Image 1 (tube, helix red, strand yellow):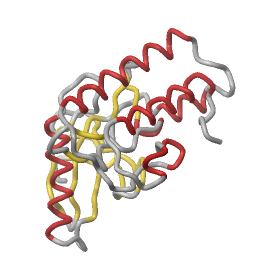
Image 2 (cartoon, helix red, strand yellow):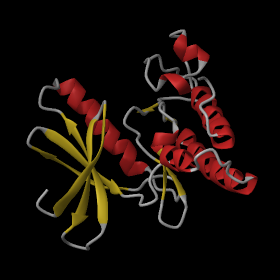
Image 3 (cartoon, one colour):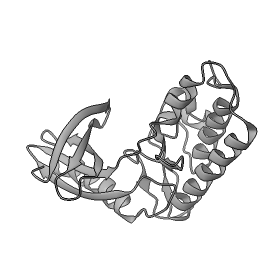
Image 4 (cartoon, helix red, strand yellow):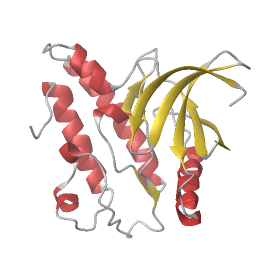
Length: 204
């Protein structure tokens, strides 16, 4: 953490907390995701490390870029690019009922699809696609983030059975605790598209 100067805490979730930092080396801002691993079993630590490996393999203009990771004071710290434009949920709320243009929705949607194709081609499920996990850079590029619950699939036919995600975006098979595959990410993507078009969640 010596290389970074803390700016402020920007988020908290099931994984731990996210802190905005400034690099002492290049002056750039990054987000450090801190995952408390102090109480974890060796197996759980391995799972957390797997998340880092998944992030490290991702290199795509529409995916939040991973920089590095390190362990400190019982935490696994993952350093990622900071998206100055905030997340899609903030953007939707800031519209105050004024709908986005069709061109804007299509532009964002295509970018999210490209990111999702990239991870699915690599046998990875995101598992928590929602507006809060879709970020905007300063120039308006959309980037898919938070692979905290993603898992590398051994083969395209393998089905995951972990019940995880955000209720509003969960596919029927997950709600019924049935096995699912990348189609569940597509369901969540459809829910996000509906929300971009109407500014309201699909299932409220």
